[in-house]
Length: 575
Image (tube, rainbow, N blue to C red; front, side):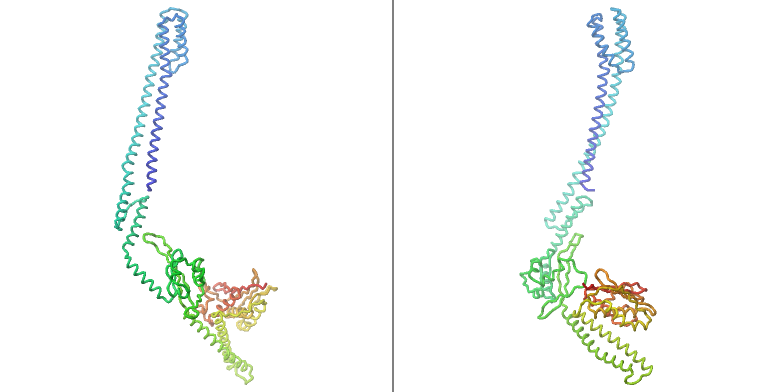
């Protein structure tokens, strides 16, 4: 329980008891006052009136002044009837006085009146005694309850007096001793308060401070300096550029390689905000972009920098430095490291691979075309007839030559994609011509498997902004894949539509479909679904995606595993 809550409870209880004691005293004093007033007002007045009437009787009742005095007090008594039987006695006194006025000087009547007054006084004296007993009981009750309340207040106050100073002073004393120990460089001092109050929180904060001081004291400054020099030497001898920043984006260190490619000097950078340097240095500006904006989740392009007397390529990585300080539980960001990894050798190998594939593919197209021409001559029997077995062999050779021609075409297209040299002629094109070309090119293959190619065209579609040749190649590739993976005696639906200033071309097959775990990978280069028995290089869909996106479009797939797939091309309408 918090100390503030404890104090509030104890002091509040003491205050409530004092209020109760005051209320009890006021109630009983008021009660005693009322009892006293009843005695004085009612009974004492009757005795006084009776005494005055006795005096008047003794002074000679026949005297007019004495008679008037008696009558006056008798009237007052008649208005002050308060006790049982007092009315009867007063009426009898009044009757006897009336008789006396008729018989002046009758001593017998005077004695009777004296007896009436004595009885009246006795009655009120007994009432006074009775009311005094009631007042005494009230006083006794008041004494008991006030004494009880006072005792409880005393016990609470005594408990606070005994316990409260110690509860507050003892932890402060222990904390003071521990602080003195810390001041004497005894950093092993700890405070142990098994409490859940302010002193417990203070102890936790003190122990955390002491632990940090102990950790700092146990470290060797010279050792730290040596480690700092070692790390600086290591960073400066790295062949990859490295820049270190603190939590305020000030440059802590920058190695020689980074200084060289950025054209900077050490004294121009260390301790300065990286934003300030980025204002006058284009390379630094491009390197720190990810620090001041939301990091991109997509693939980042390599940074091209002129270094080592040639164009070099670097992969940028921004590494956040987060630590959990000693004695704390919350992770804290203390800076960032910008690391550039030189991938120039790999890029050069990639360029060499792309050039090799392009050269080989281009060189293969000539002999393959020659083979196809020879096959056409043999098939037309212009140089002699062939038997049925030879025809089958020629058909097999023709299929293999077509497959080789397709592979070389895909490889040539892929070299364009990889080199970034996709040459597009985006013009307003008729989408019907593109689809009709692809359908015609695949009709023969569809008929061999008795597959129907169904084209749904609403008519009057606007023209599309596209490279006719490459878009036709993509649609042709989608249709070819659909025929390849569809079952015999089935149908492939080609739908044309427009939506949101875009033309949509969708190809829906009735094949096996794509398993969910492979749906996001089918557009990757060289990817083929494991276990697939169909032929292919795994490049067709990757090239299709690059061609469509290069035209500002989009290609997506929607597949129901076991029921077929639908590939959709979205291209912008011509304005």
